[in-house]
Image 1: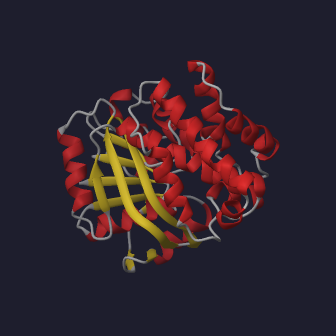
Image 2: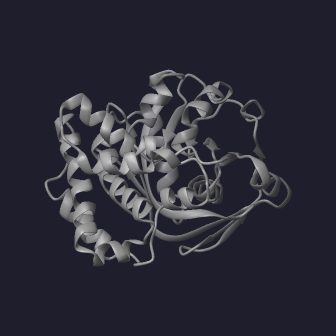
Image 3: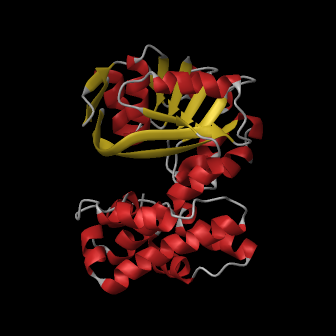
Length: 306
């Protein structure tokens, strides 16, 4: 397959390297110092699943790549609309644009600019980041990538992507039965983990040890689940307990990317996380006071200084 990684950071860089190692034609879109390093020295991945290094074409101009079989969109949600506006040179009639991003709105935002027929839902479970320009560090998480057509059809293109990802070493590939369930399921966890570590500016271990903070963590998950079900998403009954058990076993020093952006004056994905919960809740008439509190506390900081 010819694949474009739109946003070759922690998630995109990891996927690009693994797919290239599996023999696929991979093009990277990046920017800044990271792009310069990719062009001069190639991409290096340091991973708990094994290190690798690849030399792949990298650019900041989609026109230099041309039409692809699939575009894996891995930019922050704050950049989704801008990426969609630049995506036309990458698209052929059957090109799949797979959003491996945080939140449940990216697919809708993409469809505002590109034809919805191109849009595919995706979820990434991986802790990875740009360690330094040209170097991606995968430090934890199962490297599980879940994806599916928005109508849950088993199309030729989604099966081809599934074959490519499934054959890639270091990738746990899952073709979803219902991608909306998977999107909202992860959303429930990340709104709690991101929201609590950012508002308290403390790691999850400290949150677990404080009764009131741990209760708020739980209520954030519950609120997201309530909104999802009100929208007709058939979340498993044990979603809340599953994520609380998961969070209870996290490294006590674990924070979130939202906390990182807050403490480094970078634009935050608040609008795609807790802010999104508030918007969806208003549409379906569900009370979400914990998510409202997180949104109100962080809103003055959300724009960063970048």
